[in-house]
Amino acid sequence: MKIFLHFSNFYLFRLLEHEPNLFKLVWSASATRSTSIKQAFGIADNESPLENESFMKLSPTIQAFFYQLVISMQLDEDMVRSACEQLGARHVDFIARGFNSNFWDIFLVCMAEAIDATLSSYIADEAKRAEMILAWQRVFNMIVHHMRTGYNERRKEKLKQSGKMELNY
Figure 1 (cartoon, one colour):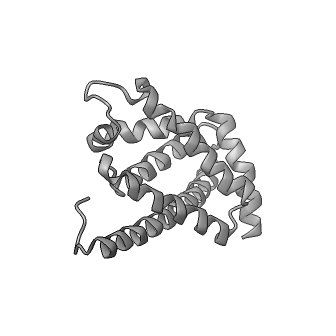
Figure 2 (spheres, rainbow, N blue to C red):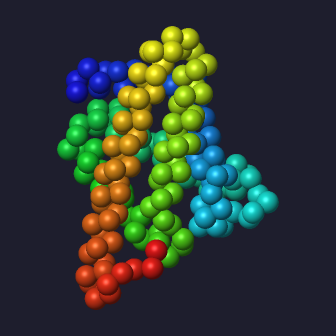
């Protein structure tokens, strides 16, 4: 894991050096792909997510969270798990606004595409690029996995507290 830590710190900066708006682009692409995401954030059907100021204000927050996990926490498994589970649990509060944990899957697809496009712009060696793409996919998949765990656990707690068999979300 230590080798990967050095790799991830260096290559996160390298990715952002080549595409400084990576998180902004991925965030916008997620809403562009999903009318449910647009609706949850109050983005009109004919409106570009990039033009919705309140939606785009979340992009730096998302980027800061990933920085925290990769740079500050150095992808320490226990610290990352805890931070992601806590964030995932907080997302239960957004269900009333239309949040669905499947939004994270859309985000993952958009992130994979953006990383592929960014790496393709400066890594010519296909084998090395494929290895890098896989490594980043593992990082992002791990993050979303832990977020989903926190989300599902809190959702179950709320179900027990309310006495319902199932919540509508």
